[in-house]
Image (tube, rainbow, N blue to C red; front, side, top):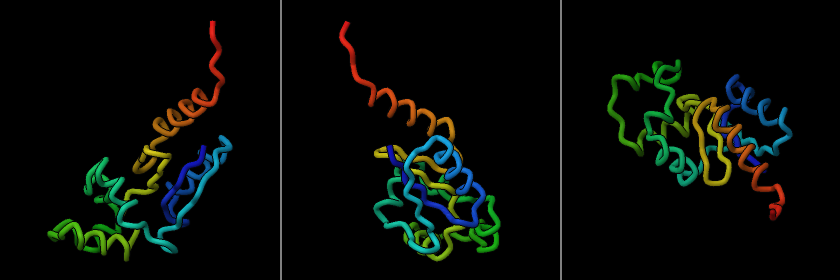
Length: 126
């Protein structure tokens, strides 16, 4: 099992997600969004599943400071703003195969681990 964590080194939520998987000895591929922005295709996986508003941290300081609560911004414009300021996102964004989560989603992550463990157990015939 290997998960991909998109976040920021300065984000306590991202560090908590890393700690969650590290404690369970799950392989991680960490992507710091300041160093490497998400590709549009990768980002769209999260948006298609949850919607753009659910992926944005609309109560966060970066969102409020950018004045986005009062502005109408196209999806393309919002993607450009997110690329320039990843703090606009609800972090961490975590992907495991076809599954994705936004924010701290320990219940979902535990389900992934359980599913992976059950899939890797040899099937015995009775």
